[in-house]
Length: 267
Ligand code: 13P
Image 1 (spheres, rainbow, N blue to C red):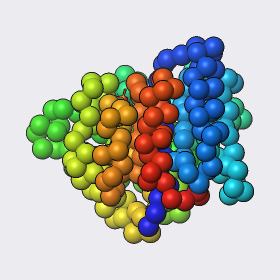
Image 2: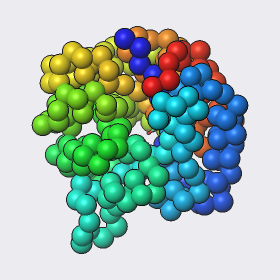
Image 3: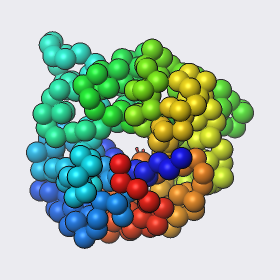
């Protein structure tokens, strides 16, 4: 089954509006040089206050999708109300987002996000017609003690609990080993692929083989232009979630360009 790759840039808490605008200009002018069928699905996730400085670029092939899509970095599961500092799915949609990153290890670690909260967010995002990018990943201690697979399987089972197979198939999972984030030490591509394959088998167990075949599983953690080709050559890695290297148009565009070789379809 062919899955259209996703190259997603998580800008984290970086770039004020003028900087976000110039990075967006550098990416959008690059993407505009290509047909949608040549490109991976490109996603950028700026801070909330810079969502007004970027916009999606629709596909030119009439499929209804985007050449470039915008993501929120987080959301609340409630529609509105007394939740100071939070943002709803509807608000992100209103600001032009079609994806939302949830369960990033930085949110789990610094903001005590639980599996249950991540599951509620995933359901709210899907109910709102957006696509969740559900992050999972193990710490160095877990890896060294051999607990990686069990830990990630439990994160995935919890995140997808009670979600229909159809909605699971539309979702995106990002495997981001915590020890590889921002360290310059990318996970070995064969090992990242092994974990992504294991995640796919957990998806198959909870949502069936058709959802497991359709769901896109990304790798994240020190992805660079020099690592992307090997990562994309692996059977179960369907793209990348990129932090540091997404903050410069040159490196992000190079990653897109190197991924284009594996793009064969549009939708
Ligand atoms: P780096 O690419 O900077 O390692 O960050 C990865 C990440 O956390 C993306 O969500």
